[in-house]
Length: 202
Image (cartoon, rainbow, N blue to C red; front, side):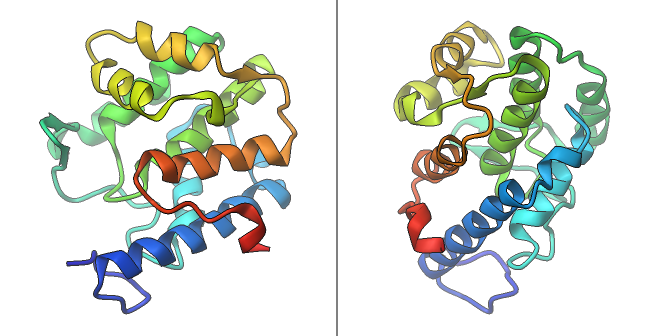
């Protein structure tokens, strides 16, 4: 069964395809219209704005905190009753160095504030922080899918792996649309979607 959506789709495969096409087009707009440039750095409100922009044409819950407990495999994300407190704490975390930024990213992944679309939104969010704070972004095409998923799974206990993985993929091409869209393509690759190429969205 598909999540309830504004597109009136009942097939989860059809919804996944349309969700990817629409949200990738919106992600491109975020970059090309300079919307990301005016958002505050390292704040949950920015992640919320990113999520709302990507998914507002698809889901009523775009940009809104989830109202259910969720898990992926055996990993349970922050319980609903502690979610707002967790987000307040994440907002207060420093983010001036690479290590601090990744630690904040790990905590936001554990919080998993939205019903759907957390990974995609949060990868744009971490690049926004990296770009503004250290003049780098992640070239996600250099991050192996399996290594990334395993490192993120283990990151609540030990974040060394994800730090090493992301550090080795840093680039100073912070204003490159190509690098930005590689990140969007890989967001879908990590999450098992087909991955429309950027050219298909233009």
